[in-house]
Amino acid sequence: MAEAAGGPQPGDCPGSSSAQAGRAAACQGCPNQGLCAAGAAPAPAPAELSELRSRLRAVKHTVLVLSGKGGVGKSTFSALLAHGLAADEAKQVALLDIDICGPSIPKMMGLEGEQVHQSGSGWSPVYVEENLGVMSVGFLLSSPDDAVIWRGPKKNGLIKQFLRDVDWGEVDYLIVDTPPGTSDEHLSVVQYLSATHVDGAVIITTPQEVALQDVRKEINFCHKVKLPVIGVVENMSGFVCPKCKKESQIFLPTTGGAEKMCQNLSVSLLGKVPLDPQIGKCCDKGQSFLSEAPESPATSSYRNIIQRIREYCDQHHLPEEKII
Image (cartoon, rainbow, N blue to C red; front, side, top):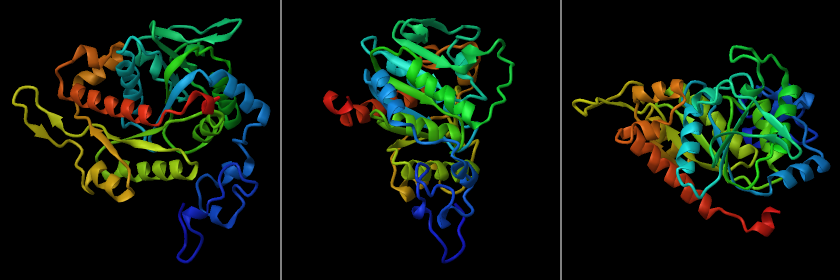
């Protein structure tokens, strides 16, 4: 939120669910002012929250993957986080894609062309493995080239359907891949998930300042909506030559990169993932990079980051009676 000297400060934000949302003095100049004032993402009614709580009570851990910037590898990270967690066959993992206008998860997970099936208990996720289910608007389109041209309320309605009507079953980890920004989809999913326990958000960035600018806004968004920040991942953090093993900086961290930003904002840096051309190839082919390139430095970084997220979730696990 841009403020004039001596004017209202960002901390004065009344919150998207407040009656003063979009109307308070602190809202002047905020890019979401019109959205909040119009009530595009109204707080769920108690009956809706009850339905969501009932459906999601069997989900032990929920992790949102966010980034204020597009093109930083957020969906790639979501897909690999799901693959990494599902490597433990004793764990049930679900990946929910709420990037309504740019659903890339079906292709990345090798599920392009699959369709959603409905049963008496709701929509059934599409399964990559027996312990890894996926849901995306991409499964509802007649062609992957179809454009989804929807206004906010329709997007919000589909997100609510995904959370309320999908038969997720017993799930250890629900990973939510989001679009870039801090608008409709983000407000909606946070409000709907308020019915249950959310472990927190993983924020994805790249080293250059043009990405960090938007990522700072995303972290600020998390603070305002009281969404815990698990930590930040710096993607495309240098390139390690496969022959000489020398590292080169492709995207220069001119302001100190994610590490300096995390120090300034008092959030955790979960790790840095170097560039590897095979990551893109695996995404295009719907393969898991972790399995296809087990010796890559990027794979090692991913595994360390996934382990830290797993440990965070274990430490912040709520007793079952509190979740219900």
